[in-house]
Image (cartoon, rainbow, N blue to C red; front, side, top):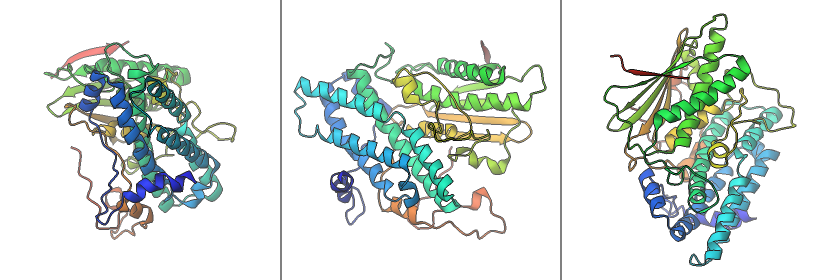
Length: 433
């Protein structure tokens, strides 16, 4: 099989005695991607992707094999793996081709578009596989934690690969783009415009389902200058769309008997290291013990729609690639719990984060942290190594506290794991109509 013959050879080379991969993915910073795009050399892009994409694919394809066998036997998961096998083979077919041949470059652009199209529904199909396994075999905490760990890495890997491929397609292919942008990167990203676009899209959906939606005040902190901020506008809009959507539903449902809904509030502040966007709502909040669950796949405060097997369980899920890169339409189906986990991955992809702080009985604050310095905004990529394999073997920790709480639980039971570090007046008000 291709899986055990070709890409496994790369992974085997990744494990020397030092356990340091010889074939690691090469993270790019936003500054590097921007500079690369400004130079616009198709040959160099071809050569880089020819080396990089197979490595990123191989690492996550190897990781599939550590998943529970019950999940790997699911029809939807087999389909996803077949897509990855085929894409790996397709990229590898260009390994020995001449980058100076314009025909080869044209064929490569076609292959990239084929891969993007093939993987457009990976999120939904993988989610369907998890549902199939849960419905067939059930799911205990141990398996759930392993799948959570894998999905974070799997979807982050997907985000990174699609970022590189769509950047190439935008620069050298047929994808139309904003004239100010270099590929999908905006060297002068208008954060307020991103806020407005995300709010309007979420409000349209909220009004469709609930017949009303709260308004929004946008505050720019004193001294904040939002010019010369390098970022991918589509990523910001995707993240904010999800948090707006959740906030709007919470406000509408919590104040269902009121004629006038309390407004949402956005505060944007730019410091030396972080650009922070804070969204506050008065939607009743979330109990403290449930806040960590907000970032678990398949957890949702909305009722899960009944899956009949006739369509993908995330039919209508707003995929950022189909919206931003493939000119798709925004759509939505609540109840599957993928919105916030994926949004946090988009934030973390370039070293940012998405943090939720809630007051039950009042409302929720969501903080989106983005790197100000584009040279520090490096891709955060999963790497398969011995530490990864141990994660899939680790047993669930038996609590050594009198009460099991969020802060004293961990499945990391081995010494090679590093501890996770903590993340670190009236102003001008604009009302978004």
